[in-house]
Length: 414
Ligand code: C2E
Ligand code: SIN
Ligand code: SIN
Ligand code: FE
Ligand code: FE
Image 1 (cartoon, rainbow, N blue to C red):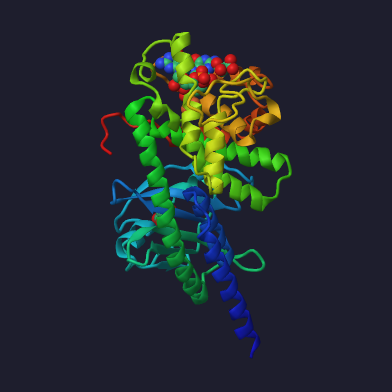
Image 2: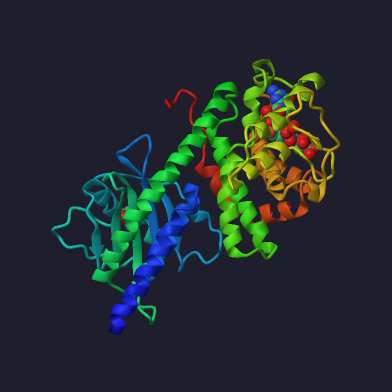
């Protein structure tokens, strides 16, 4: 057997391993991050992005994910929460690929052959100073030929770090990879949708607790976790796995509010003591949803639902409870510090930050300065100081998340 054959077999084997691993990633954003990383590694590309077909407007692409090694060197960057859209038509590269289902390979996007209908939009390059040159854009097509998005990889690099053209082998490998990635992406989109439906159910009960709030709390929590875990020297495989689960579980932190009566939940003013005492049971009710906790995801979801109102100083609720399934369950002595699972310590901060910076039925939005002041003041009181530290260190990312997930007008359909 010749050498080239051997190396092809090795490449194929690692490709199959990568594809197998994609099947285990539950959260959509974690999956997109991984797909882009692997596609770029397969082709030694400097940058790339993923566009997803919008679930409600199927003539639109959402700019869902972007990587760029030259521009963004920090492990977390605000650009991953970029939120532009692009119409699906002939005018752009990604639009053309989504429209036709055909891959596009270009040696230099500043010199596109005249017979192509699309042009390249230089706005990003102009703003960033980056020079996009070689591009390969392939459809993310599922086994039923449904196009869920477009994978675009940019600037293939030679061993000497020169920008070169993508090869025919690159094209074969990436197309094969993209088809498999599309199946995983479609599945993750369905998981996301199921969770958002559960959230919608809460929203019907509690109009202020919107899908946007839930998305923000989830994204803040995932990013705070990543920074906190990096600071603690936790290994990158564990970080990836936990970040994936934490993000989904954080969306479900207030699920238990569906069990609280409308009179309390929708009260426009301050709750009295008795009402607040009832409200506190949303943590216990939420945890009960995950009664048959079998998966890691159920376990962390239950942990967060139960403990997201505990405080670092032990003054939170619902406290230590022997059996959350008892008919006559009573609040216990507050858990403190390490007694509170780290997942809940992180979601606690994410949830309060978002409640402060946003308007609620019972309060106006606080200005940014006041919000940050409260959070710093509450370090080591309400919040784990290490979590506050991680939050402040990635504050730029927090702000980008806040900008990405804005509340839609309540009249919007679906
Ligand atoms: P939520 O609106 O999602 O608020 C989550 C947490 O953010 C609150 O937990 C609290 O720790 C923090 N937070 C919210 N607003 C403020 C504020 O103006 N100042 C400060 N310092 N912190 C704030 P908490 O207090 O345990 O409340 C849990 C849930 O109970 C709230 O979730 C909300 O749904 C409900 N709730 C709390 N207080 C009231 C109220 O006065 N009226 C009504 N209608 N609901 C309330
Ligand atoms: C595209 O054309 O593929 C996306 C937008 C751009 O980078 O021009
Ligand atoms: C809250 O009201 O619980 C948030 C600030 C604090 O812990 O006092
Ligand atoms: Fe809550
Ligand atoms: Fe909340």
